[in-house]
Length: 160
Image (cartoon, rainbow, N blue to C red):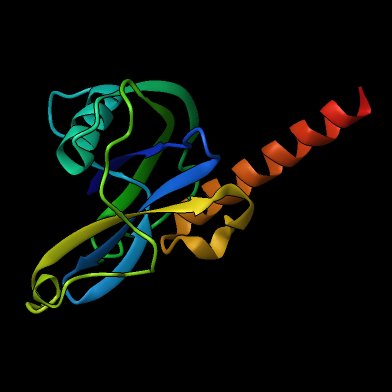
C-alpha cells in the first residue's frame, strides 16, 4: 500500500524555517507542515488544504523541491510505503501564527492521552537548520538538499 504525503517548506522574511512539533500515538516528531493526499486531490491542492487546516494560513505553492526516490516504510505502520512530495510555500498574507520557541512545548493536557495527537509550530533560524532538526528520514534528505543548494548559491554568488 502507498501513502502519499505532501509537505511545504515555508521560510519567512527573517530567514526562519517553519516546522511542526507533533505528538502522535505516544511519540514525538518534528516535521514539516503538510499531510496526506486525499483521493481526487492534486498535490498542490492537498498542500494548500493542509496548510489552511494546520496553520490557518493561505499559501501559494511554489517550486517542487523533491519527491521520495527511495523505499521508506511508514513510521506508523509496517505495511505502507511512504511517498513524500515537497514544495516551497509562500504565505499570501502576513504570518499570524502562534509558535513556540522550545522543542515539544506542549501543554500537559495535549499529551495526556498516549493515543492522542497534538501539534505546535516553531521557527528555526536558517543558520541553525540541520538534519537533526527534523525526525523523519525523508525530511532529513530534504534538509540536506536545501542546505547544500543554498551553500552552492552563496558560493556561486561570491565568485561573481
